[in-house]
Length: 232
Image 1 (spheres, rainbow, N blue to C red):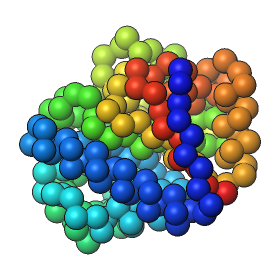
Image 2 (tube, helix red, strand yellow; image 1 turned 120 degrees about the horizontal axis):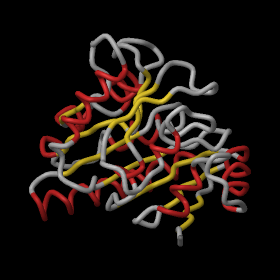
Image 3 (cartoon, rainbow, N blue to C red; image 1 turned 90 degrees about the vertical axis):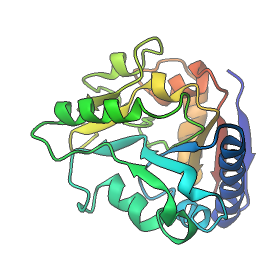
Image 4 (cartoon, rainbow, N blue to C red; image 1 turned 45 degrees about the horizontal axis):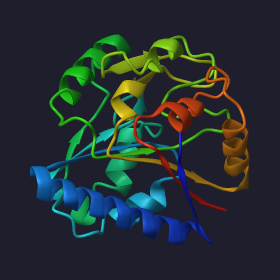
């Protein structure tokens, strides 16, 4: 799978360039179809990008935002991606965007996944923009090495859905969009920062075992060639 590498001299330059790219893609989607969808990841890496993107003069009231993955914790939990997105993205101009969470206050992660699957099904297909991150273990979304549902999650022919995932490196039980829901996004971005993440990426690109490094599925089997955005 071909991919395009975008390298920047620093993280501020990356955040600005990626915000411009995403804003342009959302604008094009709205002009073409009347609305746009954006799926984003959590963690510390996207905070600066989120803050810059939130100021871009997009027709945010026509944009719906969701999460690539989430921990099965409440939206006010400090570890929730919901709180991260609410704090850093859904502000300024982007405060007008719609937001569809993956977490629901039900008894089990499986119930929450079923509810989130039904809500995600109302989105236009494919997502207009998906922003992925990557962990030092080679996971992306909640596709963790050793994950209890990893094989099913990486099955590109499976239904588009939200799944649960448990793994030693995951901490809490996770909710994650399936690979089939992500792989055909009109713009698919892998956003990484730092020398350590670049070394992980290089390792992923040099091998083929998706069970060892699930990010390889995105790099090699996505229907849309991913764009990689990196800064030291």
